[in-house]
Length: 151
Image 1: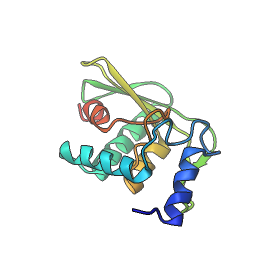
Image 2 (image 1 turned 90 degrees about the vertical axis):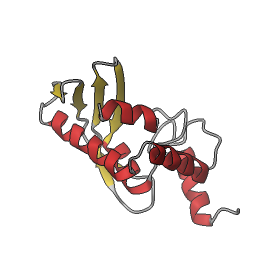
Image 3 (image 1 turned 30 degrees about the horizontal axis):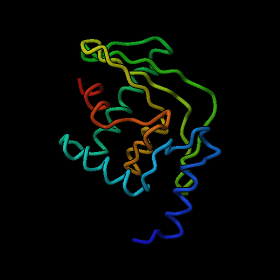
Image 4 (image 1 turned 135 degrees about the vertical axis):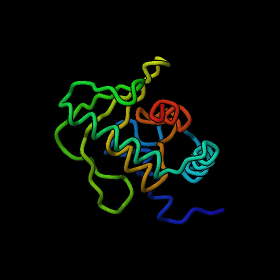
């Protein structure tokens, strides 16, 4: 299927973006639609929605932000900490959304696993179903993310 001009431009923006040094697709050679479809299938196989995942990420980020840089325990086996950086980063989709540059780290203490995301990551999952491409520094593997944040 031929890509629309808008999809082609968006994919170019995501691949070599001035917003992110490594781009949002990393070294992932798949088309954007393939990435989105594969992640949507993975999320569905986990019995969750993009919205549920993004809402949990947001909830954990807000709990961490309230601790002003210190980590806090959530549900006994999850620890979260937020690193607030000054400024805003725009969403690469052409709709004008701006996100804080907060980076949240969640650790599943019982599993010894850790994952990080940005406020932009929450937005990208909630609004676009986009976990970023493989090789991107902020790529989130849906299964790993769910395992850690829904502990």
